[in-house]
Image (cartoon, rainbow, N blue to C red; front, side, top):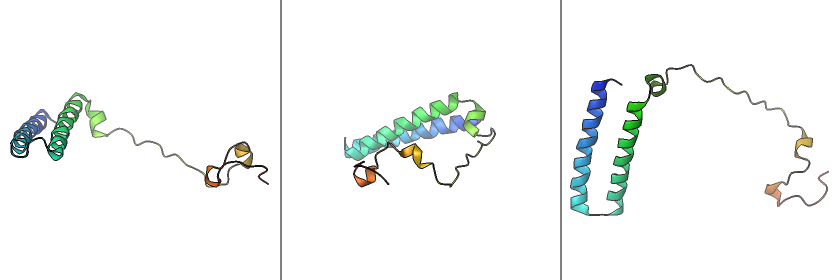
Length: 96
């Protein structure tokens, strides 16, 4: 983001702050108003974090992560020989 874009974002957040203050004046301290105030605070925090981030971090223009291949072959049953099967109520004797 450019400096002009951040300035526009800051102005928009300030305009939203005034609108939320008007809503608070009309509706008082209702739960919905408190959520709006909380969302506004979150927006300010996220905008500040974004302003402090390096462009490569913010834009995600770095190399794509390598995909992880998960084989769909059966696992070795010996890995689970001493594990409980929570779906069946736990281990209750010989599994064979």
